[in-house]
Length: 202
Image 1: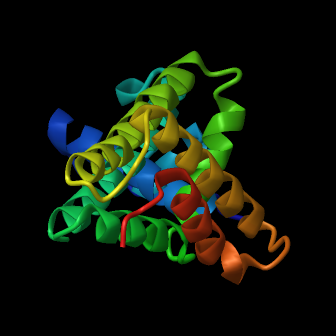
Image 2: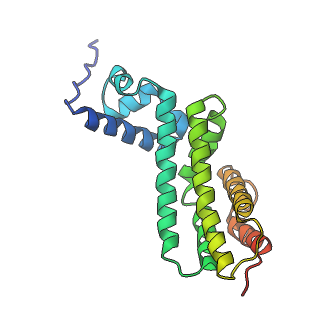
């Protein structure tokens, strides 16, 4: 029986090849989770030998960390842009909650959940997780601070409130991955929590 012959990969510049590998890793993570980002899987997705991927990405822990960071940073930018077009802070916080809990971002939730677990043994990933958690907190804290300044919200600690809100969102989204309890009620639960934490003035 003949052995399949690997088709020789097209020659590309180092920049093109690195970008191709990074894109393949992001696609794998979104489709199958961070644990799918392995040397062989990335090579198969790109259509090259594993040794070529190893040449460009000699440290797979670093590639996993960079992949996580790129996916989450893109989501943060997307949500921040969405919120920027909303006139009041009360509307912004409501849209933020609805956007993060409507079930359309479950592939990113999987990436987050796996990153928290894998980060215990991947220092580069753990550092990136902390950085992106700080970035998310800054977005939410900014919305809250503007609401306080405009007289829409009442809170003595915007940073702590943002941290608490994100913790609840993350927890409910993680539970929804295994369809525990009423996943459709996530949004209403968090809206009630926001009312309690921020005492919005209507």
